[in-house]
Length: 90
Image (cartoon, rainbow, N blue to C red; front, top):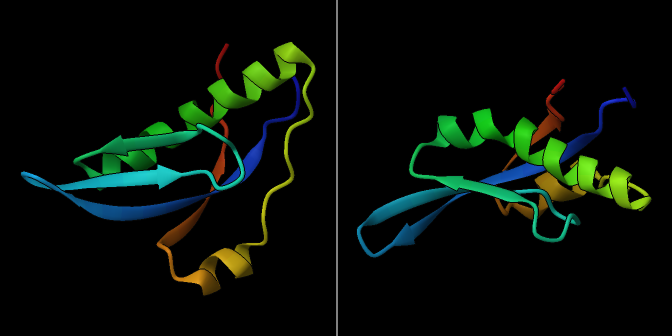
């Protein structure tokens, strides 16, 4: 198996009509995010979401984008920043 991809996730809460939803966004990975009403579920699913994105890139022969600077993400104040390692799926 290829080396597992590691990338930052920005987690934030957004108001919706009947409460809040947690969104985990991988900045710089177009279309790569997780969302749920539960913060813990977003964090738990993030490695699998990242795996799907990385697997698609590998299949298509696309280079995996470099991660943005953690300091810049943290300094931006857009949300909590986590470093996520893609899930190892066999």
